[in-house]
Length: 430
Ligand code: ATP
Ligand code: MG
Image 1 (cartoon, protein in one colour):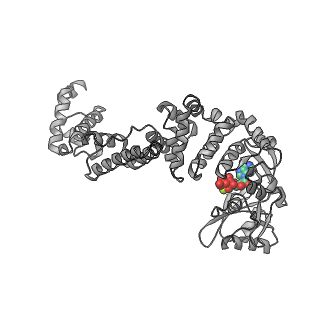
Image 2: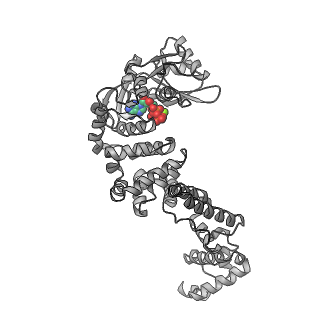
Image 3: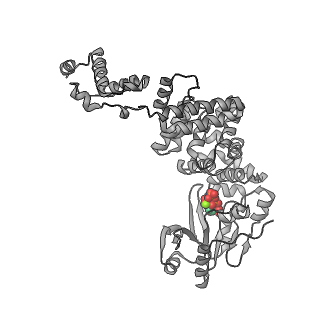
């Protein structure tokens, strides 16, 4: 078992030294300690100290009040990184969603309020000493996830810990200890009491950070979490288990760091109304919702034999900027179907890229004519303008050589007269 960690960054040691020289016991805690013990160093170092926020602020020149009421102060190092330091705390009141905390005097109290033993390990960066009263390092070594203290109580204090359990067990390939697992399963009905933002962040962390997110998602399913929070996916899993299983494999083939892409892959087997419903519940930004929905609901890339005009129409409909992501999604899905399938997707992708290289007009803004030109032609501004421009675009998608002002003007007049939309007709209507 590892009982020693790589040396902490010098900025971390400098902060700890400054606090300890002033008489305040200080430890590295949380994710960075756990990750380093698990052989994955590189996370953010969080520090816990007996110093109160006011004392911390008087000892360092450049501080940022990150959450003074929770006792968290950010210290800006000379290198420009922000290191968070939090006064020892203990919970005085919890309701499943929030905690009321007060400052504590000892590191053991601070560790005792943490969720899992693997997250309750302290490391002293100067003495290079582990303080691990709940044997988190042992659990990490044995591959076990368990709560600090009685599982049911700890989950009732904050139901988010159920989701965190699934995420950490998946991420670190841990077995959830029987009592912890039973408690988590029996309390999943309470998950909807959490704020949608916290629920969302948990899912996004799995998608963004975990190189193999299917383990955590299996646990979402096995624990009943999927049923409670994402019933659309649970229904898919029950009705089409092979599709669900394949969807998880596809996720594994997409790299971490791009949750948008992985979320789109996860939602892709759902009908578009259900995708939309999940996205609304997650309360993502409008831009992210739109992007994920467009990726999840996209039509497959046109196969190599497709006429150029149809490839341009596909590019226009989906946005040329989305081509690479859509190709990545399709490639990840195709790899399960063998070499031939993957080769076909690669060929479609290459084809679309080569068409793009010719820089064909693909959107209304690429047209050599705009609304002002329609006005000059004597048409009356109004909602019909959009339809006319769309029709012009469709005409140009058929043949990019048509993207000439004079040709477009002629065609615009034709469209307007076909629909009785001539200048005089417009005036009569007005
Ligand atoms: P990651 O950043 O990869 O999600 P982490 O362990 O750093 O993992 P954070 O949410 O950054 O997780 O929290 C830092 C530490 O704070 C955790 O390691 C844990 O000790 C404690 N902690 C965070 N959230 C909770 C919670 N809901 N209940 C109890 N302790 C928590
Ligand atoms: Mg963290």
